[in-house]
Image (tube, rainbow, N blue to C red; front, side):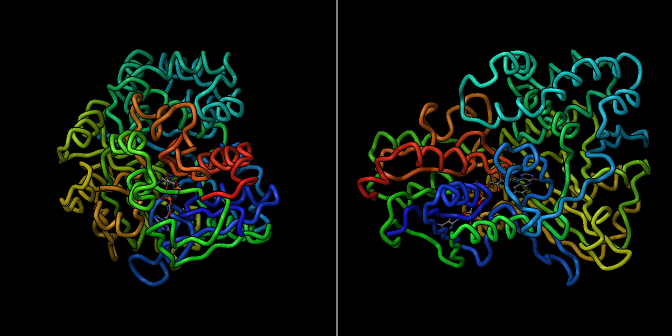
Length: 477
Ligand SMILES: Cc1cc2nc3c(=O)[nH]c(=O)nc-3n(C[C@H](O)[C@H](O)[C@H](O)COP(=O)(O)OP(=O)(O)OC[C@H]3O[C@@H](n4cnc5c(N)ncnc54)[C@H](O)[C@@H]3O)c2cc1C
């Protein structure tokens, strides 16, 4: 009898397994793919010698995570690499806004009233970053009520309204839009300011690092630590039904609700099934990776100091693009998230050469090839970019879902993260990790606090298992 089984080895599945193993429980993880990691995978997608992150690449949320930051992952081979500046936002006039690790340096570069406004808003939030992140990465509750109230007053606003009210220049507004657009939610929707603020706070408080050698190394370090605690990871085993599993007291599903319904079958009571069937998925992404013969020739050379670049121009342009993908339309000038890891981590490419990672948002399930559109957007701010391309690899929503069944229609956020669904993931706000099936839990990013490599969905789900002594006392499913 194994105490607990986890289906899926994404960061949340591994975090859940580690939490249980740390409490002395026997745990086995089943992973459909040949390597553990889910969103934390790396592969030579283009040419031998070029290591690309298939999904997540910037692991800021891992550093902000109250759980992951406590794990001895460095002792298991994890090394993070910090770019000089967390992110940059290139503009059509050839300049770029650079967000530095320091609030003051960023405010000084913005200058004038915008610099003062930035310093006024960000300084107290960054000072309280650790307790704030702990509260933000917890299920709905009243943790840190004073901090959450002061953050919430700003965060509840739309990113569009917040940026227009706080900043006078298009430069500063564009910079904030670029951070908020990570949410995959239209920037005029309530609470999108919260995404932008959260990511900017993280940029200053913990940085936006990448993993030396590729994100897979983080999954490998988590797996190695889990194994050292006595846990097991079985790869290459897709679970189609609970009947496939050995006897256990608890099952934790690192799965999207739709997948969970398929695997749990008729054991799911119809009222809960109906709730999960209503769970909405947001836009998909079209992902690209390149092998390059040289660094991207950004017009503003300061962009080479940044790990991440938000490519898409002004606030209005980014808002248009995000609205389009949400409403099922393709933007011909989309917001493109670009990461250039090899500038800071030479192990990712042959000497003198580079890798580049990018995606844009597209309608869920879109079949349109966005290669030309994405490359044109980068070329707009880096003329000559196409001349540096040695090889490219593109993945639309269907290809992404084939690599990881949780990425439904290319949705990388585990479900639309608008205000209506962020607190009610996947159904009940009060017991989000439990299901009506005795001893069966959900622990993926479709539960709070949602998308990102922070492992907190898995950690909280495992805590729910540990608190509910029932499955451990009476035998589970
Ligand atoms: C292209 C892309 C870019 C991203 N960039 C970033 C980023 O830079 N920073 C960041 O913080 N986040 C990023 N994310 C989001 C991040 O990867 C996810 O939020 C995170 O991985 C979710 O973790 P998870 O454990 O919930 O699920 P996943 O990581 O999706 O893992 C689920 C695992 O379950 C396995 N599985 C599914 N079905 C079965 C089954 N039936 N049987 C067995 N195994 C199964 C899958 O193969 C997978 O390994 C990105 C995601 C994508 C796709």
